Amino acid sequence: MTIPTTLFVNAAQTVTCAGPGRARRGAEMREAGVCSGVGLAVEGARIVAVAPDEELRQRYAGASEVDCQRGLLAPGFVDSHTHAVFGAPRYAEHELRATGVPYMEIARQGGGIHSSVRDLRARSDEELFALAVPRLARLAAGGVTTLEVKSGYGLSVHDELRSLRVIKRLADAGPLRVVPTCLAAHEIPLEYRERTNGGDEWISAICEDLYPVVQREQLAVFADVFCEPGVYGVDASRRVLEGGRRYGLRPKLHADELHDGGAAVLAAALGAVSADHLAAVSPAGVAALAGSSTVATALPATMLFLGTGRQAPVRALIEAGAAVALASDFNPGTSPLQAFPLVLTLAVSELRMLAAEAWIAATVNGAAALGLANETGQLAVGYRADIALHAVDDYRALPYWFGERLCFGSWSGGRACHVTP
Ligand code: NIG
Ligand code: FE
Image (cartoon, rainbow, N blue to C red; front, top):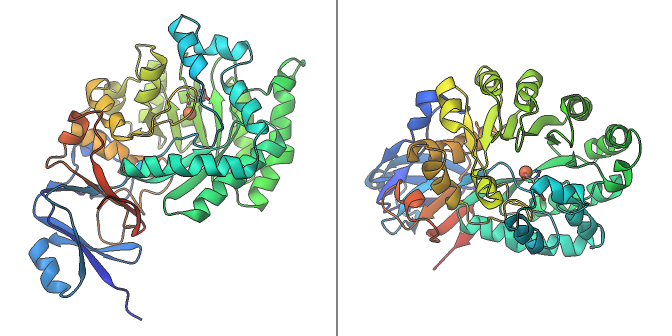
């Protein structure tokens, strides 16, 4: 049986991000493969040709066509860091911070992540799934075609497994590609926090009771930890991540988000797939990441929403030779952002990235932060047909016209996620 071919033609501009199927560093991050008059041929889940429109029409005569309407043809964004499975939003906390109460103080008082934990534990799996579906649809409507989703609002073996099973259901339901991460070490559960060595006991429960089931049911690809002074220090984080590795889970970290605690150095030493946040990373952390294979993921929407006036030193990271990715950190506490293109705006305006660097960071390097750089993140032959169309005629226009909803089509593995008529 032959697979039907679909052509994506009539784009004003195409940003392919084509190149090596690995994280890009330094000057490579400026090569976004911007061209005009170029379209795609897609068969099933794969891109089979990238060529001028006329050549495609000749080679695939009679193929159906998607009209790019003189817009921008681009790879779908790879959002490599989200916490999309949660219950209620946290409006009160947003205002509390405005009155001067810091994020960590709210957590110390039992709010913040802990309030999302209480809320999640009280909801059914069905409810959690139903709440997440429209959120993923909104991400897809911004051009995201692959996303990572973390657990971390369960914080008991039972509720972490429930969260991970909901994430698996989202992955199975499609059409977005969902990559699951076990973030059981998102906080120290309140019921453990009051005990002497409570944090260590919870890590033992994660390693001995949770990870074996996660592996058996294939519920996660990565293990993550909130490595931050006052939550999990470097030794505790190492235990969480080395424990995960014994069960086939690759390490990722929430690293040096609010204070430098040596998390980026730990990430590099462990060969973590990514170190995320980095708003408080030290020069030693920057150097360690630059000399490692760990992707440095900036989450600029989080720092904007927290109002810290601080951002990850992305210029220093790029100049030192680190591979930088961008993600939304979509979550109810610090980044309720579902319109992904705003991340590109913040990348240019706050992180001082060039638009081309922002595109590479949100596609190829996002894929690398999920170990998928040889499968997605670029418009190239053999890659997954993860595609987005935006109603602009220049790749720099997407970060520029901020706050607009400009994506009018997205496809993950060739399946439509979001198409406006
Ligand atoms: O990436 N800081 C840790 N985790 C999230 C926030 C989660 C929350 O506040 O619910 C983050 O910022
Ligand atoms: Fe996060």
